[in-house]
Image (cartoon, rainbow, N blue to C red; front, side, top):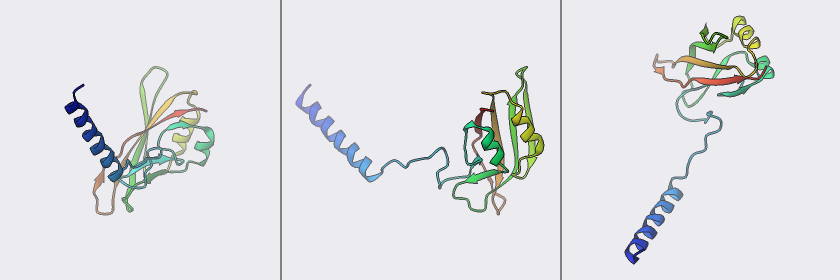
Length: 138
């Protein structure tokens, strides 16, 4: 390696190190960072493993993010049935319905379910929200 290449690499390394110090990465905890656009959660979880104890304490779909007046207008829980056909239940507002609870309780262990939601703020602005995917461990 030539002296010029070594010096160039040293300069680039220094620039990258200084940039990292000036702009450190922002940690994101389980998809529920306090800032940013709304993100949905169920029983405090944005996705991942969902236990019967989580279902017992889940009453409504929640939101995290900086949009204080954001609210869930509708949401859908989707599963795949035994024949690999998609089955959905939709609720108006953030509350889980009795049908939704029953559907989740009856899922075979290791089944996945996905929650999608429509979210608006007080001005009527529609906010895009990432779906949350869970794995039932019932």
